[in-house]
Length: 105
Image (cartoon, rainbow, N blue to C red; front, side, top):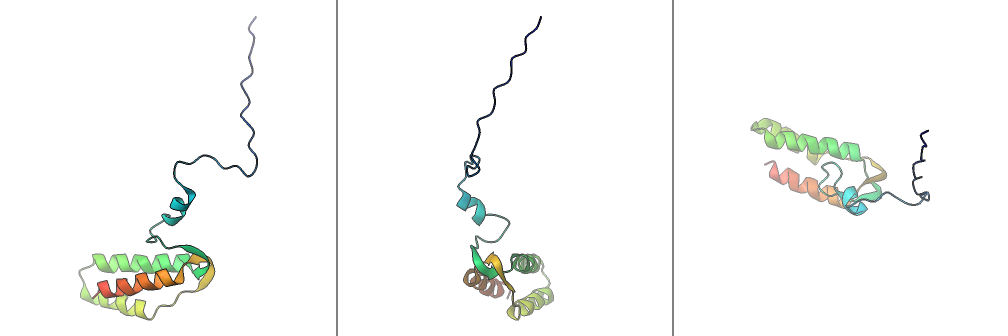
């Protein structure tokens, strides 16, 4: 007759414990997506809108068409972002877009 031995039960974790991760949580939060290391703050610029504008910058910089680059540059100078809970830091985003507009010339 064959006897079956039960498998050991996994250790119980409290609700507050998190799984082990070799990378610090702060490093994960600052490198999500391609946001240039923008800090996520309580009240900041809408993440989706900023990411969309950054995609426009990437396509304009990759293009050799000066008209497209000028159009994107003009669009960015008059662009405003909505302020949301848990958005990108406004000062960091503003500085990034100032530099991006300068690079589009």
